[in-house]
Image (cartoon, rainbow, N blue to C red):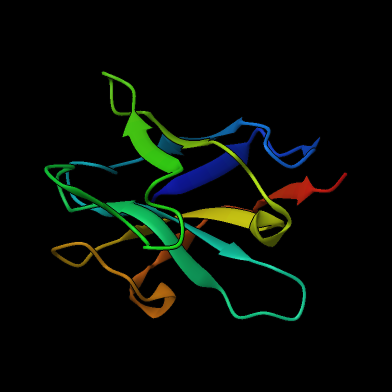
Length: 124
């Protein structure tokens, strides 16, 4: 059973940086693709960044690829989302998720396991 837990959400000002963490337990990177999604107020859940199954490749959405970086620790137990130059549009609940499907999955419907989410609020 895969279990995911996000942390690191905070209230920050525009232009600030923030790093989110996702602690993963169970058979994760070796048999799942892991990714980050976010959902703002009144918005659909949207793809942010993801690792492929086996963590061989990464991909981030065009809206964040120049500011966000996805990474993991050497032991592959924690995934990170480093966010720079945050703006108000980045305000959302951020979720980490795991997919049993191959490749980098961009749709939240392709993910089988979810964390509880961590809130990021960007405001001056």
